[in-house]
Image (tube, rainbow over all chains, first blue to last red; front, top):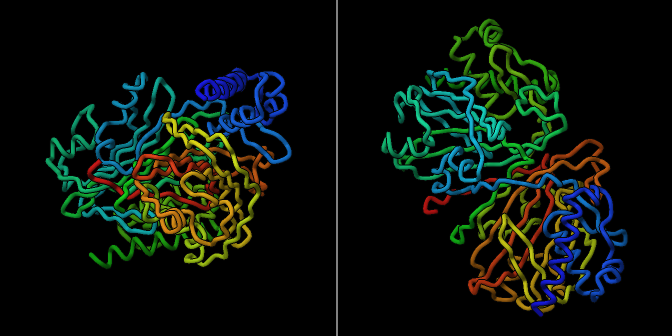
Length: 249
Length: 249
């Protein structure tokens, strides 16, 4: 049994390697069940499992009666970020990149104080920050690739003079450590869009159309006040978002 | 104060209506702060808040020194689905669509029994279902628009003969009610890609490139066994995913 498992995995890995090396191009077929049976001298069960494995890993798609075709996901090196967790949000964007072996760099495009508060709609719900708010628009790079185009609106009532702080810490760490805020929760919504090379406001210098995640989020304190609203764009060819389940909700 | 809030919201709504009606096209500028001040006889604070409101609602993007430009999101009628929650996953895909006023329809493309189990990789973690598995590939429509291309792999050890059941219930309800399984959690990962009209395996009949969410998920029982693995494609122009925060994790 364990030999059998090793066999179908080794066949699938060999085929995935050929996809990665470009031998099988997106849209092309990988070897069929029959071809795998005759090439590797395996049973049809093993051949089918090899193809399933390739499909389940996201490299190809099986179409009934036609074959298994390579998907256009060859640059499939995605960083994974966890949603729905204050704990992981506490780790900064830069810290995570450093742990993953990248050199982070930030460019502040704009920092402005808005006097009369702001409101944002996230999945049909209205979130309001009253009073003075600072809007910080940053471009966030990893090894000189723009990964995230980030705009945050932070309550200056909750975090006076946060706009004057120079810090390499995450804003979450600053809210908790500098301003002693008790964070209660975070509401996040992901949508997706395509940025074409000529899309207005597109800072991602991609020569081809780019799938982009749009993250809208609001962070609340235990007293119910909204401390931060964020609207950011993540490169969809570089990121995945995963969710930790909550069996109680 | 309350009149002031009403004013900037009504101005932003008027401009959003003009975007929706096509008066301002994607890539075009909406009225500037100065133009809003003179048209509506309001203060510059109100004018700025109107533009911020439009930006925060995702209709436009402000570019420093250039103006506020309409984003290409005019068909922005998104259905929101919640991730990380067994509770909301228990409600079926069809049930949710009905509640939202759509007529759901399902087309089963394939239903096959795999004898030797399967494994899938979700965010670097390997999930395995041992023994017989049924693979069900369905196209899920709302009012004749394909919303989701769904493939589920379900353990026939945990759910014997589930492939023979005819039911309009969600699989989650079936796991719990018919097979009395105690579900412990769900691990979900979202990635995004672009389906071009000629992408192989693309069942979405869109004449233009389509942003697509790819949802990979695994569902476990309290005994640790994986009962279901899913890989589905959601139309990215029709869906948003939101996350309920979990302050404890």
